[in-house]
Length: 115
Length: 508
Image (cartoon, rainbow over all chains, first blue to last red; front, side):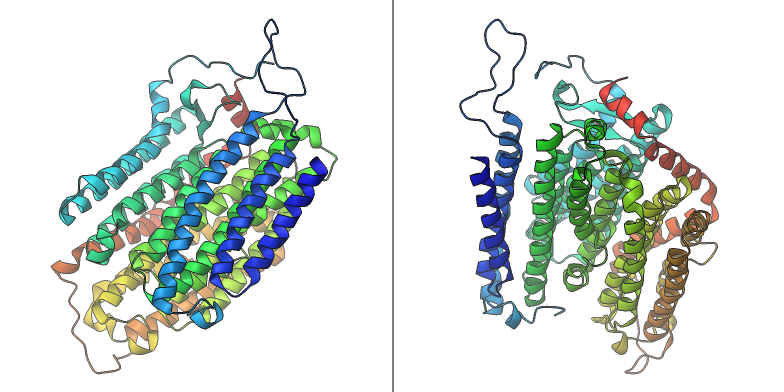
């Protein structure tokens, strides 16, 4: 499963970078959100996920024994999802505003660089 | 090992100083958003909140000076499981600086920010940004650092695009993209680090890194962090977003950004190289030094080519980041002390210069050097207000920049790093050259359209006072450098004693 997750993470990063390199700002925002997904999946993959092993100390035992599913990466991902959700909402408003002010979706035509 | 346990006891009263720099801006932001119906009350709340933050920062410095590094477990969850807030002298001093800049900027904004942006939540956003900055300085947890970075970034995104002019739109898109990319790298690095060592507490991670000694993994992780913080700090070759965006929002906002945002990136670089990856630091220091030299040189060369005051100063931000990185790259006690001193110096001097630019703009409705002139004759006070921080930035005695650069160059010579020392000295000269350029163009040459009347009278007092105050800091740190430098040296000692930091956070 880890191999599958790793490949999927790589695929998401590749797509994100591809989308970000396009000249359209809509695609740029899609790229940014894919980048966030890729990072989240990376956190999950890097923490050696295991299936069906909840981190609950069994009755009578003093502490957890390996393997167990670590809740911390999931908490991190949850936080990161919420943050990226907020940032993407902002990015959508920004591109909406910029397309109404500038009247184009193309970064090159926005007078980019050092305008 | 149990996974969850209670720390139990209530935090000591003195440790409350660790929470205030986060709680005060949060409270001020909420109060400014909901209590301030009139612009006047909103401004008063905002200024009072920044002043309170400054006081809290000073209290924190007093605490840290007395007790050394202090740490507190939030929610009484014992370290390394909960999130710890930690203050050493560097963090505490930077909190003071954040409070001071907050106070200066919110005062400047009374006149410097238009009613539209004020209604758009300018004051609340400034305080959310200050909260993020202070949180980043005080946290002892890597993921929490990420969260504070995001708090800071989201409010800076909105401040950057607030008002929504055409120029701002394109700049905001660059700014948002590059910063989100940096955050994604930081997040990925943090995730991989947790997967490898199973901890996020910086002190704990620095201990557990020893298990990875002799493997290439720490260097890979460090690369993630350095690249991401390098983007945020605007280090060579990752700085292009800064000159492309910093000149578009109003000067009050640019001042705030230039003073704090990039500096948080440098702070994070210092923290990871002196604490988390202290064992790997010696290997990466030459790279940091090379980056520092190139950052200085490209920044100042970019500045020389500019013909507009704000763009020119934006390139100087990059150039000065190079000096801060030079201290981190040298890593000796003297170099780190110079960096701490330089932090305070450059933030004060650069903010004063940006504010003077704002005043020039409010007087003449332009900041293009070609269209300016005669300011020295029409308002000598403003000329003085420009000259002091400008000479300080260039490093002329007896101003603050001289001591900062003197110590930095001395540290470089002691370490035998001659190329970067030569770069630092040459860049000082070029800084002086570009400051002279502003001086001759804007202040000295006759105004292009004949003599102009400029009045720095009462309506602009809110612009003038903070700029003078920041200029005075540059003078004060120059003529009374000794106590400031002693404090910086103590901060450097703490930075170079990661074991002391770890024992405070995790217990002996």
